[in-house]
Image 1 (cartoon, one colour):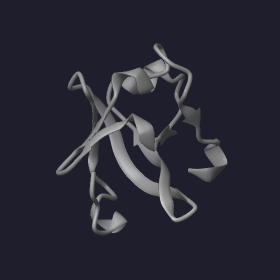
Image 2: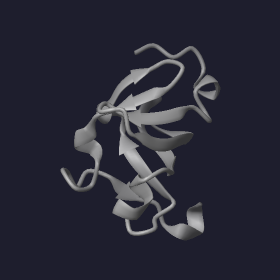
Image 3: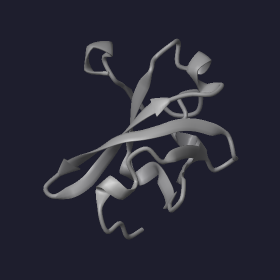
Length: 92
């Protein structure tokens, strides 16, 4: 996955690898000048699964494809894996 500028993907729609709408990219979190994770504002039917949370942080390892849309691994969803970190409401 090669990205020229992070600003090019901000606002991109995010879908799971099974085709479900997940949300939109809000920002990238960097660690040692590399992308560590993505802040996603969630939307669609996934909101109810997260107990009303408005955003999550998805580790970059769960991103399967970046293009016109983001594709994330379904294993990143909370019902199958606890690797998603909820964003505190005061940071959204």
